[in-house]
Image (cartoon, rainbow, N blue to C red; front, top):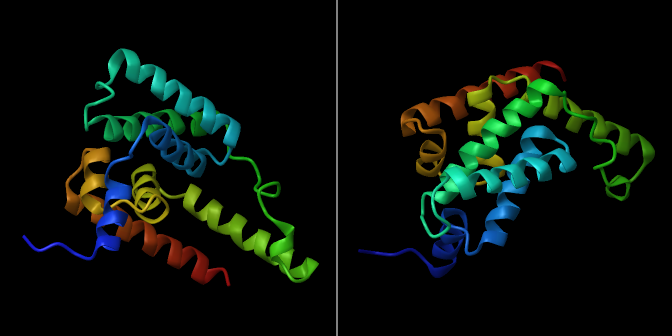
Length: 172
C-alpha cells in the first residue's frame, strides 16, 4: 500500500485519534465552544460528557471513545442551546487585529452575522458543518460521530454551505 508524505500522514493522525485524554478533552472543548459560543458552558458540558463516559460510555482505551464523546457533547450542547441562546462575541474579538475602529466594528459585525447564520442552520447541518470545517474531520469520521451514512453527511455539509452562501451573499 502506498502512503502519502509523512506530513500528510501526521495531519491525518492528528484528526483521526487523539493521543491522550488531555488532547481529547481539548478537542471536545473546542467543539463545544463552537456549538454553544460560551466557554464556561462548554467546559461544563465537556466535564459532564466525561463523567457520563465513566458510567455509560466505552472504556478509555476503546477507539470508539472519541466518536461517543463527540455525540454526547453534541447532544449536551443542543440541550444547552435550547435552554439559553448564545451570547455576543464582543469579548472574544481581539481589537488589535483591526487597523482602525471602523475595521474592528465591521469585523465584529461580519463575524456576528456569520455566527447567527450558522446558528440558524438546522441542527444536523450545523453539526456536520462544524465538524467538517472547524474541527477538520473527514466525512467518514463525521459519519461515525453523527451515526449517519457518508452520503448523508456530505449532503448536510453541502446544504449548510449553500444556505450560508445564500444568507451571507444576499446580505452584502
